[in-house]
Image 1 (cartoon, rainbow, N blue to C red):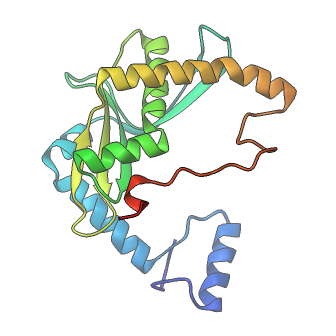
Image 2 (cartoon, rainbow, N blue to C red):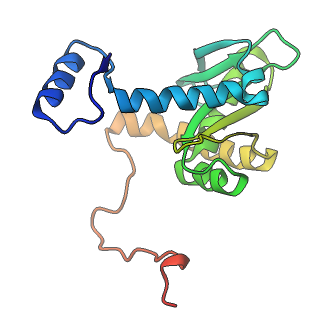
Image 3 (cartoon, rainbow, N blue to C red):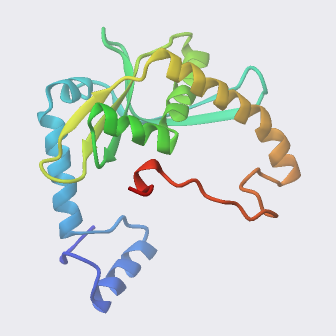
Length: 199
């Protein structure tokens, strides 16, 4: 539901948002809607991104049993293209920087390679096919540049190792109700980024 506002500053707009969410609706204001529409238009105008999304289905959910651990796994690909000469799995990601270097940092920061490896593993278990995986990165700031990225095989392979380790650890964590996190009994010293160092 698009609310006739350009932010959530007023109490009335906040109350409207709360009420609509309680009704199970996804709520955006006009500013958010305009930004999303402009980003979608940029993706549609991008020759390669629009070609990838020209056939297939959105939000494709699939489930499988991991052959190594026996646990049930699931994935929901933003886009699954099947039955064509260019079958693939694609995820659309918003970002600040869709360039090769910029989005590479985003992939590393948010662990996107692990999700790609997980989706690819599951599809291969179900079908016996290993599809290409593409990230369609679209910048949140105008003019909403778009770039299609495919991770190198070694990055996917490294991520697949991490995913396999996580799958192996999951049953134990679930049975014990304990999941690994950050140290709870230590005071740690953060690493200062190089760009924040003294000049």
